[in-house]
Image (cartoon, rainbow, N blue to C red; front, top):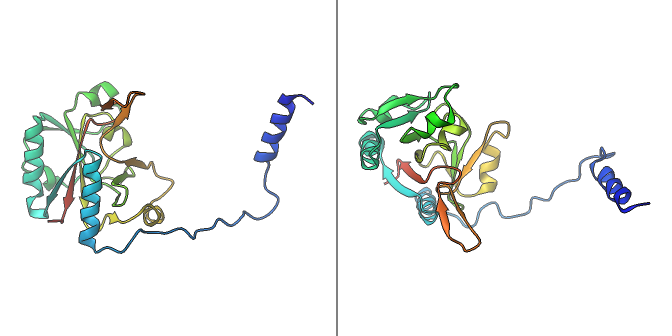
Length: 211
């Protein structure tokens, strides 16, 4: 028997249909590292987002529109991409031209948009992660990956959990989940960091309801 035959034989055995019940997977790991109040969880999320070089802001509902208008103005955004289910009052004080997500929009058209504003599905404090699932206030995955500036609004405490084990049961695995920990970045072998390689160069997160 050749080496090729032995390798293929191992692959066939590994992918063969199981003959018995699925093995039980132990779930005895910690679900969360420590006990926190909702305010402490929000503070941890903010700290970890900042560690990843995201810009974190806090606002109440009555101040959100003015904050978003200020962030877009500081960016010099002339156009802003709007998901179909974004609450209209979020951008009621903003001046940029609203660009609606269209199925026929090309990557070049999306790249020409200055900013995108979305909600989120969930945020994870211990890892500083934002999860998008393509919901109405988030839009399709590509609108948060192509434009260079993404403002994401997270409702606190409703959309914030402490840990990944707490987040997973709340997410629908059949939806297009995008997990974001800070702005897009990569490093070469010399550890020179480059941002904006496969997503927004600038990520701003608004913790709504946290002051």
